[in-house]
Image (tube, rainbow, N blue to C red):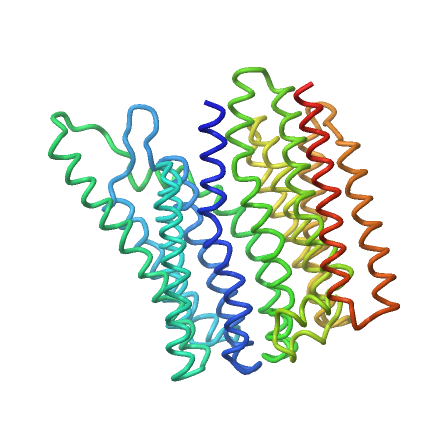
Length: 470
């Protein structure tokens, strides 16, 4: 049983890779296809795609993860029910896009709304595959979407390198990834109807909405805090500033938060199983240990982005984006890491204590703090102030979650894990000092420091595993 569970976790980790890579592709590839002014327009449209997808489709994504295989005596929803639910937000999504285009917040409203709808529908079907415990279909949807967007962007980028062309490529790749799950579900449903003698009750679209609408508030708040800064920078400082800010901040976030999300995807279900078998105290100890391991695995990436931002960005981004606004990438990476701490450490405890509503409250609190701070900080400090507002909002959200998750009793503080993080910090600090003496070798020194940090992490994981076995 344990081996099959570990095998399933590894399958989901691998199947999550194409879903993670789509965000990195948008930054690394699209920034090379477009001039800065056009990439700034695309960045604002891409921010709308993420925010509107979370606000209008988040309820369906979360409910399909839980209810795709059924609930109680009910079987999962029909594919026709899912398609009908995916059609509900289409008109609001297009309407909001045209309203924001009218006030100058985004460009190309039709292409933006179309890409938003198709990408959100693709994510919904991927979450349905997760809910049906089918990692192979989950991986296929992500891989087809990634390849479709990549090929489409290459074709339209060589013919018409404009922001709207790449938005159509993004929407086309997402639509292509929807075809396989829809066809496979239609065939499976037809076979099930032929074999079934007695009809069974199914999860309806209203039940999907009733289950998932609360979660969409939390997802929407997080997406607004993560992606809303591009609207602010674009409207206050112009499209070229938005392009540079997006390239640096989005790359930093994509290297941190999706990795934490992928590594922590199995913490909640495993903790719930331990809670049923051994009690909540043992489950919370498992959460503390697993979240510490997850966050330490991402810590070397964070520290290199903090201490060597220019060296890393110059190796990954076009030259016009790599050497400006040196503090944007470290601040964005730190904010993403703080949100990852909340996701991996605090949210599972709140799920375990049946207080999941506080997850939404913490996200809303962080959003309010960000909304209050972002305009004055951007006005005073420029794009660095915008990134600082995001980091402070993430810190406030994490502080609230940490306080609430510990209110039922003292939590477990991983002293050895904290010591390992401090050791990594000292390694990165020493590497930064050496790089200041040999600036031409800064990238090589950053890579060597990452290797040394992961060696220290390997020793920590080996020591804790031996301690658990003993």
